[in-house]
Image 1: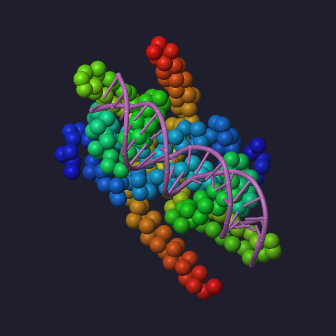
Image 2: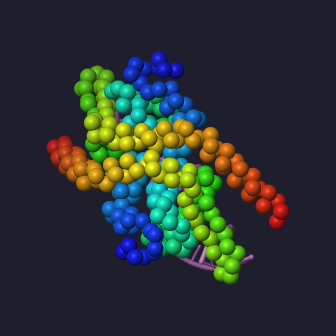
Image 3: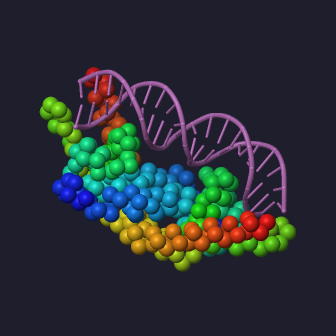
Length: 134
Length: 134
DNA sequence: CGGCATCCAACCCGATACTG
DNA sequence: CAGTATCGGGTTGGATGCCG
């Protein structure tokens, strides 16, 4: 497997089934899961609190995302059968361990946001010039 | 802004425009960009090599993804105008800096893959029992 | 209040065909 | 070889309405 090409990645990344990027990360890496987890990292919150705290998420997506996070064990869900009912979401230790690994990436994103924007603008400009030349 | 709720995240995560997750990470976090970057981290590769190295990507998605990575400055593209033409992709130092931040997350994914699978199975089973009871 | 169900629009993505 | 262009299915995600 590794002799497919010279200088290429370890076998694990070829295996579509076991590749850590495809299997785990692609599901938890989405922006919603990460945003929700980040908010819960600062305290337990009700469904409606999360909904208000994340202005650009729909109720449907929030429901779906917390369900995924609960199913994967990164978030715990506590139902209080009062009237009206109350549901609280908390981050689990497992969820915290994931988030701590994401810390560096988030810092990187924050630090390099403007650099990327400029690079993009530069790229788009060059492309526009080439198009005009043809 | 921060007084919206008690114990909630720093302001930056509320700002849809400047939030590091939404702005940068949601674009680079997708599985394709990460897989491509990982392969390029082990050496420069031609388009067709990448296509063969990543069995589950289509030509269209590969083109699109390397273009995104190039536009964001994580990958460099070198065209050799021979017949037939040759295009080589390499990871840039900037791309390497991103990848190094992702290292921990990838390790986490690899380490906890089986745990997550079991947690999911457990969750699904409990849910099935509840459905049967009703 | 915290969902779930439904409908519908948008876009993601693969397959295919064609070009320099 | 390394793309671009187009079509079409499948999924994502928003809007609305109903229910415990």
